[in-house]
Image 1 (cartoon, helix red, strand yellow):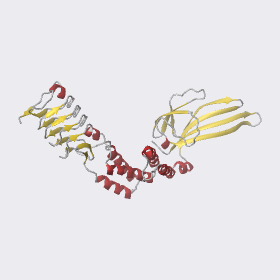
Image 2 (cartoon, rainbow, N blue to C red; image 1 turned 45 degrees about the vertical axis):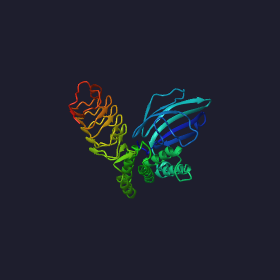
Image 3 (tube, helix red, strand yellow; image 1 turned 90 degrees about the horizontal axis):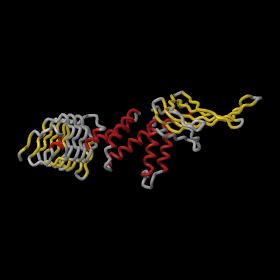
Image 4 (spheres, rainbow, N blue to C red; image 1 turned 180 degrees about the vertical axis):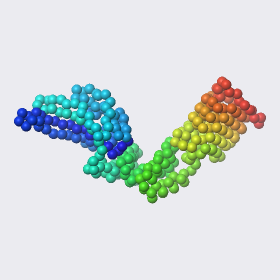
Length: 356
């Protein structure tokens, strides 16, 4: 997205005069920077704006796809409007007056940048934040997303102050580790730091990176492993873990560039949640050192998984290893409970049973 673009809606009125020719009655212009726009909506600075633009279908780097309401009241087919282009979508007459409507997309002028630029956007974001501050100095929860969105708009326009706010906000979440959806924050912080460094805010960037590097390897609460906060090709899970939560590794893999190939699960782990390792395409070896219950689809679709060793008795639920097409060797302890066909598929047989 090019946030230096501005979308403009122009209303013109005029009448034909026998003496002077065409007399312009006036022109109304409604404009908003692309940074204020999301797919499906337009936020105009003015309070009263005609509803001629029905929908924003797509926003590209130098274009916008939109639909407009024509003068006849019908909705147009999607229109691709590129930077520097104007689309004239109709006119109508009422008495001696005629009215025309145009929509255009262009680069922000120097004067517009003063109003819509990074400094102005940051001031608006700060004003939004201050209006929602509670007595304890924190933002009211109901207004948090609105405030964050305002700072993100300012950051996209190039405000280093807005970048700083976003990074500090992310680091607050990193430090507190609140909520089960914590896994979103490390990725967000990393992205924010990259943006910050690009903006050459070196001092805050170094400080933020240092704090980020101090984060623990895992997010563990009451013995439950909820997330992996660093990237590894081989992972040994800490002994304090008694349960691996559902979707834990499959969720972390979405943001990790380094693929996980080997995982060792200690005796302390008694439960592996549903889909905990689902879709890990590069996982090759799994070792579980104790007795464990393995949930449905826990290791499903691990297409490169070649060997599984479970040293304690296992209770393996259906589809736990379904569609592991490279699986060649599975070692289980005597007394383990499983239905081979439902767990591993119709063509696979357990390779070895450990007597214990």
